[in-house]
Amino acid sequence: MDSVELVTLINQYRQAGMPFWISVAVSPFKYREADCAYQYLKLEKKFAAGADYAITQLGFDVRKFRELRRYLDEKGIRKPVLGNVYVLNKRGAEKMAKGEPPGCWVAPELVDRIRKESLARDGGQAARLERAAKMVAIVKGLGYAGAYIGGTHKTEQLKWIIDRSEALAPRWEELAEEFNYAPKNAYYMYESPAKPPKPLGVIPRTLNLFGRMFPVRQDTPLRRILVSIFSWIDRRPRLAHNFERLEFAMKSPMFGCQACGNCVLGDMEYVCPQTCPKQLRNGPCGGTDNGQCEVIPEQPCIWVKVYERAKAANELELLKVYIPPPDRSLKGTSSYINYFLKRDSRPGRDVDNPGPPLPSSSPDEKNELHSSRSR
Image 1: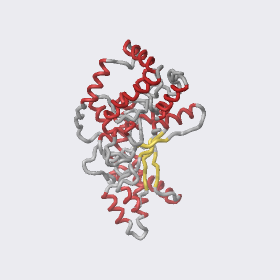
Image 2: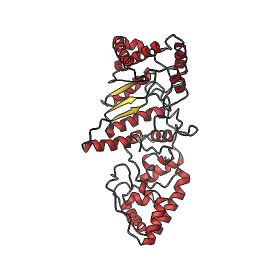
Image 3: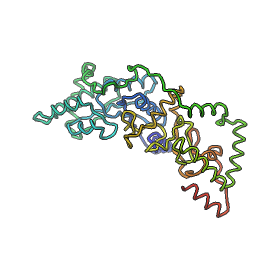
Image 4: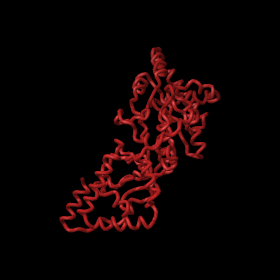
């Protein structure tokens, strides 16, 4: 399950009476358009799914803190958000400068500053705590609901940071000028020049055209005909298996299909979520690095392509649609049959109330069907 699906599940338990308070994460510290915009789109999905508040990833760029605050204000989102304030020491700074852990990044200029501070008699502790106190004052001045303080568990240090931040609060705008640690040519949603969308490729253009020419999402005569055809195929397990193999042979080289049986290509700009190493369905994780995958760094993040295609098609709002987790019992079965017979898990369909069950068969046919579904 991805984070949006998990929030949805926890919220369902809460509605049933279990007392949950749901927190989620968001990283405004993304410096390419697709990475940045999708973080904010996904945060909207998390809030819509039932999240109560959010905490930012750690970063030391006030322009990005300000950007997220402006985005939420313009969208009318009133959920509380905490700014992440991290007491960063030399060891942590050097690791994060290399992207460890994924999603955390520290500018070389800040690393150099912390190295110099660490030469002090106290190892740089006073400078670290002062920096944290300044950031608490800044995020509260920007309108964040508060600060999430990390990097220390010492009560006396936490108390000092809080007390010092209150003393610095009147100067927060002046202090904000100190925290502009960002890469060169960084993307800022409200500052960077707008880039024209990349043209759609032949495959998404063609499929979009077919979708307009042959609408099947609504109750149309064409859909009713296809339901009848696929119902007839479905009652013949051997034929249904062969049809699934034909479907896989077409979709695998074109989309990277893995025969999940719950195809949502039409909701993801014809990019298969199974090609994401984490198999996320509602947007990228927080570990993307300049458009590259966290798990396989040499591979582009698939969500960059989803975003660019949606932008080119003027369909960015559709990326806010919730995509539920797949029904994994359908793996190895035809997604077309599952779609038209309403068995699969997809936007707008409750997987707990599926369509008609798989047909009853002879013992041999049942064994064949089970092998097909378990592949």
